[in-house]
Image 1 (spheres, helix red, strand yellow):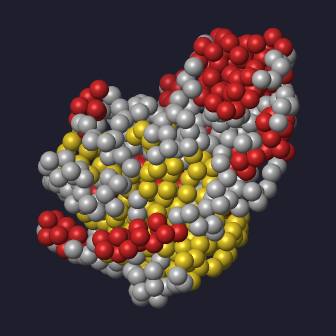
Image 2 (cartoon, rainbow, N blue to C red):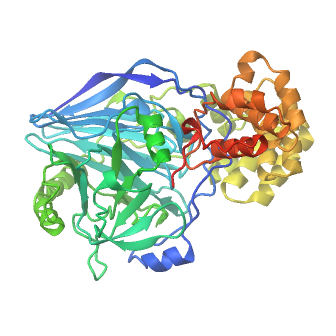
Image 3 (cartoon, one colour):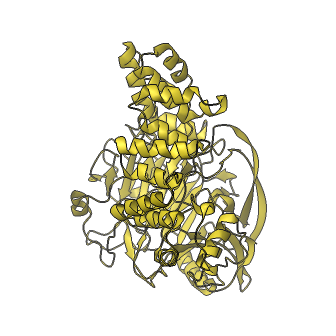
Length: 623
């Protein structure tokens, strides 16, 4: 087996700079009472609330739809049967898994890397296998640098990737091994809670698999928990009739979380899920018993579902096979202080006849599980667990900040010391050494008890109280967050970030509008504050139009400014001008499940008396 650095040529949109702190996000609710009753208890796994926000992360929302050629750093693992390529500059994504015997790519790859608003921080892209840690959704590092290096033992090479995951304040780490003559790639994440408090444990490995008309999905289960994004979870038969195991026939966007446990509730010793099309090998994802969740996701056959696939992928179509620490993606499991979560996953080819009887096919595929190989892999991964890697690539600088601030114990197995520090990283290290925060850090929060304690020792001031507000907000303490932000304003009435935070905390009323207006007035050149203001000024369309009229052509052309202008024009009965905007409107960071473009069209249709159906370029409905 060989590990080497490679270059991956791909057309890609530019990600752009980071935006405002991620104060508000669109997330599904925690488990309802009915969901808890449906799922029942799990021995040894206590449910815990998910984090209250995505802080300290900032939004990644400044990408567009223009694609240009890019060369990305990759790391390749290969033997005589498989070639795997990871992308450390994009969250460690497993971008390619090729079966060399057949020349078959087992993972879906889009025509280009086109970002869309599906992740916790906004930017996300389709393809490959993504490894998510944190809370429900695509994780905060999916478009960020992770570290990568090689660990060797007894002539075996293991790829290690690592990063500091800021939301849950744990080290994200994953070892990857492709044994000689193996048909499976093995990975072993290792997540340790070094905090004094329990941490929410959320992990899902999300594999995009090419969709064919004959594609079929199997799991060692006869029932599944069904989520159609419309309400409470339901338990359904699988595959049932019409056959739920045929993703190309799914009527709408759907999740199936497979019940792989025994009737007595005992975890499957080697839970797995597999997808294939009958025209060549498909993909199997298997794991040791710790990774209990197995899932199928399909976009469905609605016009909106097809639109999302085209929006993200170009011409190709995919479904997702997923593996998770919990049974569903609504659940978060408590990882107690000092405890470690670790397991082994296997990814490799599977070939079967899609027309075969379901139970017969499950038995046949199950017999091909690499269970013994996973046991051998676990042994190897345990042997290399504490060994330091030969570093190929450094992660971003946040882990180094934690180590040098004294908040994270240095660990040679996941070295952060060589990471590059930018101006913000250095400024936070100054705060850790006793300096007061200044304007350099206004848009870059920190969270966690140790940073709160450090800030508490600083002299009161606009920036100290701004950050204490961020920290309270991250804990779900809205009242104290607002108190700190008001104290920040008392020290500096034109503090734009405190004003923006209060606008967010005030909901959608007039107070929110007032704070947003003052934030825009305090920093007129900031596009994010401009957009936030225009969105909150929707009830005053004449004001929106007067603000837009004063903008430069470049700022007036910003997609969300165009949306605000179109809504205001409709409200003022300037329907021809509104139609000119709506007919060519493209919103690169439209949120998944958002109806804002459809709502805009409905407002226009009602005002104009049009009975024209929703134009296809505006239809992203998931139902």
